[in-house]
Picture 1 (cartoon, rainbow, N blue to C red):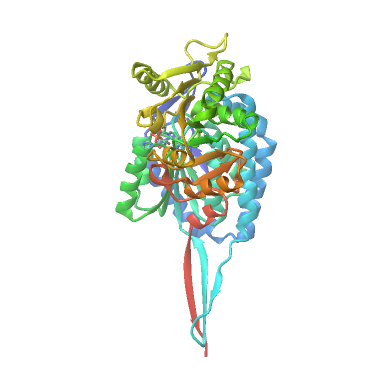
Picture 2 (picture 1 turned 180 degrees about the horizontal axis):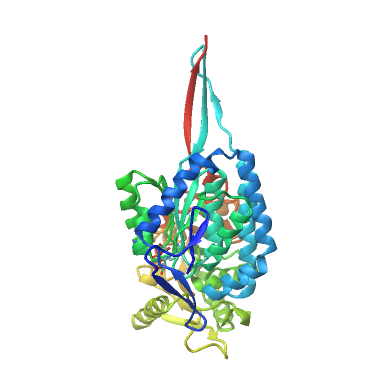
Length: 477
Ligand code: NAD
């Protein structure tokens, strides 16, 4: 229950309320976390603010860099233990969780390496004046992260914020936050002073809403649903606080006739099955050139039929969904599509020996999905792939851009001119050509258009989002 980190000390919420943490593979409670509320958030923001004047704010860029680099090596040293915990609370296969912990270490390495290289520039100005534009921290940054990749989201959001000198308050997701608590302790062990990172576990409508609306914060990084993204923006508007919002997607994989289909097939399957489809950048639509449509969907169907879902130790293609609500939500999508006459081309299967109380869902491939059907437009957040044929490059672009989202696009073609045209014309924060995968590229700026949100995380772009330009003009005699 001591899951709140405030001013360097682990403690229970003021009101001593608790929440259960459920193992999605068994449906059984295996841990408890504190249910922090507005007064705990207030303590966290106060501690963060104080650290900017007392301790963390005095660290040089080099000292900040060293803390983050030490954290990177501590994460690597504890990777197996962290991966086990991450797999337990999210249900993902152990090998996948282990690979994700490497990504977390990489975030600390990347932003540790960058911390002392963020400079400004000199601006040519009037005679007898020096003008410089420098970058400085925003102040107290708030981070509200989801349950699908808790550890990775921690690294992605917290590491750049600390690199540029902000003090941070994290509200992890109530469904999966135990790894983030371990990572917070690792940062303390790496030399992060008290107050520079505070963590308040709790529900979204209590701790999350209180953090987003707190008048003492200067920035919000939010990853989650568009619905909550709207609430976060409304709260931020009142306090004139800048946001970065990452709200998911309906990302297309576009397969042309001349593509290397052998290379494309496993990548396309993995892009939707990975993390049981609970990935903001999941490739949840596959758009296929009409001439190849029948043969390629037949190959996809064969691959889907061979997929198995299991608990972390089963080393299956993917694990369960995160909770019962999510299982019911995904099931309803599939039931509605079947009722509407959309054809299921193939389904994977749930491995023998899994608990009947786990939230397992067999990967499902739908064919000839009408472009205006919800399966072709809305984020399911489950292992459900919608296949649609297209007749021309123009048609492919129209279909690709025909959702409210714009996060990631995959383009599969050997034609270099077409690659360039497609990259320019799809409305998408990232475009992958003859490859796909937003997860591991910590160097690559990431974010969306439209309903996918705005602002960019990852890469050097995150350092710009999480800092402000200050212009200083100095007249000399
Ligand atoms: P959510 O948006 O409710 O939760 C995400 C985070 O926001 C959690 O930490 C939650 O506690 C917090 N939160 C919830 N309500 C809040 C509020 N009023 N103010 C501030 N913070 C609040 O997402 P969910 O309910 O866990 O999942 C629902 C759907 O959201 C999914 O089916 C999926 O479509 C989408 N989702 C997207 C992502 C992504 O990576 N883009 C991640 C998780 C969920």
